[in-house]
Image (cartoon, rainbow, N blue to C red; front, side, top):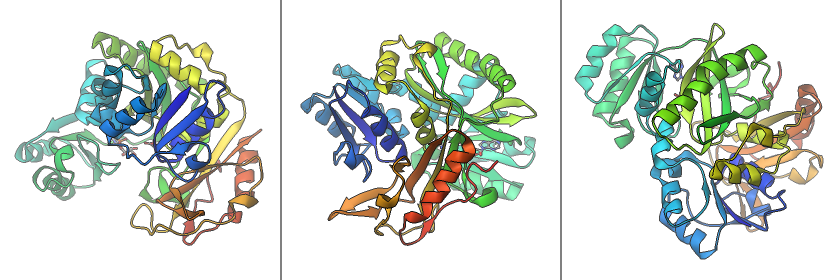
Length: 417
Ligand code: AMP
Ligand code: GLY
């Protein structure tokens, strides 16, 4: 089989790594890929939003299966385009991808089907939105409706901040068309958690649990990032919580998909806030998470190609998944300045000095003139599978200082619980 993976992060490197272990696969392409995928796949210089180019490439190269990493091409409708010409592709169609592509769509879906979530109202008109905030208490949350590269959620502590945010989104269009509408939402205080599920035919099959670290600095200080560390399994997911999630959330999503005839096939990533033991949904993503994928995939003892194909043909069952009892931890090396401005192009040294059984997924790296260079804010996911969480964690921190590049940063408290 020839497989095409779309994307260029740690998530896509982890997917390529797992796909390369399948006996069904003879060749992997990654568009555009990174320095890590270059070692196991052929990187193709097509960007993730160049859907017509990706389609042409898949047709010309007789690709048997395409896996979409990031949300943007899914929301743009890449799956529909590939399916129209008979190409197999893993991910939800454009209609279903609105669960991530439009906050209003996903909130309406939750409301309609009794899925617990924060109270909300949506607006396109600035004056009406300003009037409506009178009914909310602080802090309150304002979300641009569309995709904003993780920057579209603003927590406002007072009326002044809320009015300013509404003005920036609805009048000054800081998010362009993605901010034509806003969702104003009650602030939920609790512990955040997420669960990634395979979905097909109205069936929702959760993967193992994972906990990610969003803040850039130790002790959860500093600004939010895309995620700078993660581990699996997460002790937060007790049998009691899993049962509540199954009954109050997964079963209801499943019913909702069926009622609305949403033919969702792919990954549904559910972000929760657990408030006094009760999970409420914060958001849906319609793709694998980064860095969640880096800690879930090494624990998966099933051929991932089988899972993709069964999702596409609708026959996937929970018995198709075999999970390792081991613990997996990943710590992400970042460029100084991330998630703000940072410099790319520093040479990365020392990866040949790592223990053989350490798993290194690349996020933002590139090979130039046979040198490996930094090429993003998140640079590499240093990953270890251990008998215990502590063993995996120690293994990472014993190895991590062997890697070196100018401005290297990482959290020292990942999986320290
Ligand atoms: P979202 O993209 O909707 O998940 O929002 C990004 C982040 O904003 C979440 O991971 C939470 O940390 C925070 N957030 C979103 N909605 C709320 C809410 N209603 N209450 C508290 N925090 C929230
Ligand atoms: N780790 C969060 C995400 O992938 O959106």
